[in-house]
Image 1 (cartoon, rainbow, N blue to C red):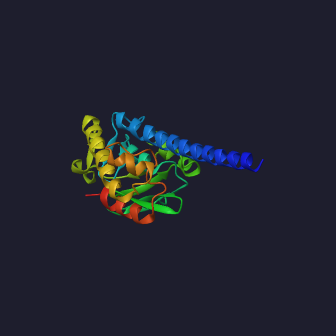
Image 2 (image 1 turned 180 degrees about the vertical axis):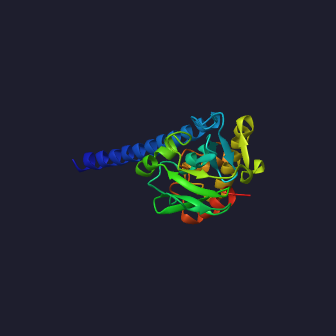
Image 3 (image 1 turned 120 degrees about the horizontal axis):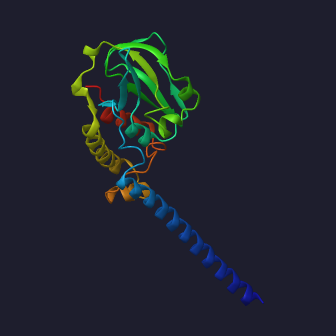
Length: 226
């Protein structure tokens, strides 16, 4: 009986080890599949509506008839951050200048200050996205807008904005830069790290669990206002 019990325990341990190995392999495969799917095109990222311009700070804007700009985080920024927990809105009436923080996005105690690329005055904020911050990730170019600015047309520099096909090509370049940025900053043991080194694009929300130091480096590298 003792021999049978020992044999049973031995077989059970082997089965447990195999189950753990299979689970880890499945988890890695799922992560890699998600990342490699992004190689083809993250849903909605390349679809830049007519009249929408993207800035070097990874904000987007659209002018209306009253010479006001509706502004939000562009699809690249929304994709990299993933679902948000909070958006800190600017105060209505606040005047901003290029390079000054326009709004802040937060997730798991990490914070990004998103700068303005124009001079203007905040005339409205999106209370819907303030109440439901995930809209900035799920629908950044429509319901996920952040605020409206009253600006003089002369303050909007064409050098800092891109639209149409130019915007789409620029986003492709930025996603390539994001992969290169993440490679030395993600542990090789993680599924994301291993796949990034294979040349795949990172998964949506790739910054969400990385330390604050990486968020600061990301801001310095990608949220440029000039």
